[in-house]
Image (tube, rainbow over the protein chains, first blue to last red):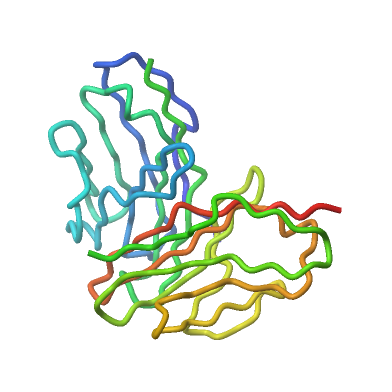
Amino acid sequence: EAGVAQSPRYKIIEKRQSVAFWCNPISGHATLYWYQQILGQGPKLLIQFQNNGVVDDSQLPKDRFSAERLKGVDSTLKIQPAKLEDSAVYLCASSFSSGGDYEQFFGPGTRLTVL
Amino acid sequence: AQRVTQPEKLLSVFKGAPVELKCNYSYSGSPELFWYVQYSRQRLQLLLRHISRESIKGFTADLNKGETSFHLKKPFAQEEDSAMYYCALNTNAGKSTFGDGTTLTVKP
């Protein structure tokens, strides 16, 4: 089966600019996750969707970050405006359903550098 | 709130030696626990989950609810085991939390 796809793979922007990331999960997976991974740290959950509804966005900085999953398939994550501390790898993952013992399948990530 | 702690950032062992990567968690409910691995230039992927009680690539992990631990063990480390290892927890509500990872280096 095809894996989780993400684009772009790399992005360099200046602070205060905007950026958007795209994710296409594995077909049939109801749950989609966006994680932020800062160098030296583990993935931090930003937002979790179940189909096109938000399950958890408690750690999403909503003043600058937004995400949507229209039609319950692919998703976009946007940062506007970006700050230096947003430099990180943004990982998208999907699973058949939420929680339990369902495995998460990860994309390759997007490495964002904010100058 | 739930938390996953991996106390060792770096772990280095010689080939053939036993290895143990520690994971401690805090969660008031009944957790589902996982180990994920990221090999060089590859995606993060599942290594094993506690519910299946299986051995994958010679690795095992036992959930100890009394000590709130889920340590990953392998009796004889191989060079190809060198990677980044993450312990993760799923709550009853489906929320996922990862530890900060341990970099394992197996020296020849």
